[in-house]
Amino acid sequence: MPKKDEDYRTLSAELDMVISNLSKPDVAVDETVELYKKGMDLVARLEEHVKHAENTLEKIRLQFSEES
Amino acid sequence: MSEQTVFTVGEFVSVLNQTLEYAYPNVTVTGEVANFKISKNKWVYFDLKDETASVRFFGTTYQLPGPIEDGMLLVVRGVPKLHPLYGFSVTVQSMRPSGKGSIKKAAALLEAKLRAEGLFELERKRPLPYCPTNIALITSGESAAYHDFMKILNARWGGVHISHIDVQVQGEAAVDQIVNAIRQANELPTIPEMIILIRGGGSADDLQAFSTEQVTRAVAGSRVPTLVAIGHEIDISLAELAADVHASTPSNAAELMVPDRKAIMQQVQSRRQLLHRESVRIFQEAENSLVVKKERLLYSSSAVFSRAKEQLVLQSKILAAYNPDIILRRGYALVRRGESIVHTTNDISIGQAITIQLDDGTIDANVTDIKKKEKEL
Image (cartoon, rainbow over all chains, first blue to last red; front, side, top):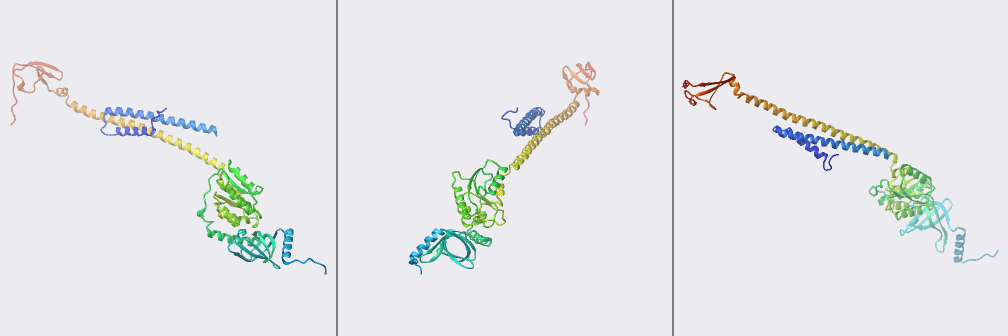
């Protein structure tokens, strides 16, 4: 379940920033490793967000299907 | 000659009036209007005549159903009386135009008068509340119009609180009852959101009450918004012109008042489907976006590593060029005296021990001779 204070839009913007930094010509190898690690962590958290939202939507849809 | 009672003039007038009061407390007379006039904006005088006779009538402007002109046909109810000074006349109790022609003419005159006052202006029209929960319905409870209205209303929607004020919708009593009903609806303990005034089809005579000045002014003056639907006639009554909204029939009034629950449910269903589709689309787009970003992440990182590797290869090649083993392999030797490398002939003397490093090993030797290179000019 995604953390409460984590906003999807903020995380996505952060991932865009990581990708942008990796694309710079003067990025160092050590920094690349750190950036890549951070980027993959952000991807995992974003995927969790999307999955959680999809599950919640499905529950709501089923709930209202049963009631009607 | 038989004895007859001899009256004085005054006595005769009294006796005649008593007789009239007993035999004809009120009469209803129809005829053509002649010599119509209004005095001091209050008193109305006219004659009703036919081919054989003419009778004088006297009333007040309040009793007028609308503008009256000579030549119109009227039906007048009143009290016949012999005035001691002014002769015989009928004191009007109520009057109304009669016959299609007169009714139409009276309505046309009245319409022109009220239009000039601005009663029918579009700017006066108020919008009706959407889907009201509390209304006042003014109509005859026994009429087809009432039943049609209620049937359509209940089929389309439910839960509307209806204060029904039962009135006569034609005849002499109709005008006063309708006017009072509109006032009553405006004074209900819980003010309704709208007043619906309806009646079904009928002759011009039957619908006449809804083209009287009193009813028209009552509709125009209502503080509560009004929806009026009178008859099935093509001609619109003056009350409908004065109303905030008019409907073509009582059934149409119900249709204008509330939405159709079936249509609403269909709209809700289709919006529910749209909601689901849009949500799925948004999630799909988010997932696709993440896949792309993941690939870009990997690609960008790989690109950095590729660049770094290329640079390393280049640096290695450059470094390799400085590897002393390669120089030795080419036949050159490295000369040392002890630990120090001998760079010039000045670094050693004859008789000193040196070590010569070749590609495949070292040679220990002693310096037996030193020959300096001649300087180039």
